[in-house]
View 1 (spheres, rainbow, N blue to C red):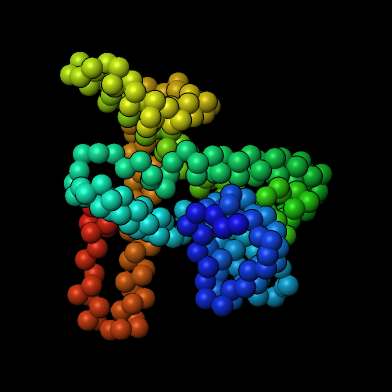
View 2: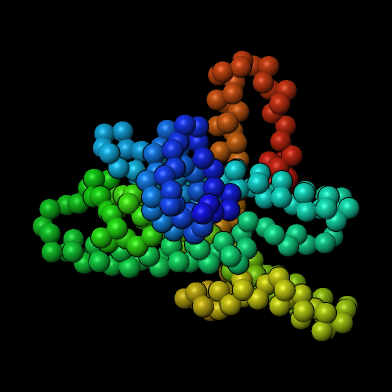
Length: 272
């Protein structure tokens, strides 16, 4: 059972039964042998450990280190959707299947819950230890972390993944709040019921999250706008940095002539 957008690197070997439905847009690194298991961490990297016989799970790795793949896939899906409707890229109709949508965000929320429960157990245990903890060396498995399958991770990766997941959920929820504000302003220009239907269709899940995240709904409108713009900028900067590294790697391999391929419409839209 393969999750949406899961990518398998060259020469990896997947042993069945395997359930990756709750790990959408994850990457199985080249050469990885994945035994039968269930993994429930979206946007993650799974790779073999070079000095051990187990696999390492990097929660949320794609969000933090390879976000261009998400943006590129989202753009590809949108273009296909528009072609199916016989419409151009500039159509005013809202794409109804973006990657950051309810089903995917619900997977992220489950992962946040798994990590927070795990950290509560581990940090409570560490309080009783006198020596300083090396977070890179502190290995965590399914004894403490639900959803990790038979992979392992470490404390540092877990904390980084948690932040990446939480930032995504906040950006998603704030986007819903801003969409709601725009629709309320437009109610004077169109039928009120139609506007409410659009809120229910596109933004209700986001607004529900906005109201449930501690402190978010207590912020002023300007604070919400500022926070959303900062989260979006951080994500976009990662996308641009990721693509820049791709070009630099290509130049090292193919030479300076690769510059003719440097224009990228996706990046161009992010930097406008």
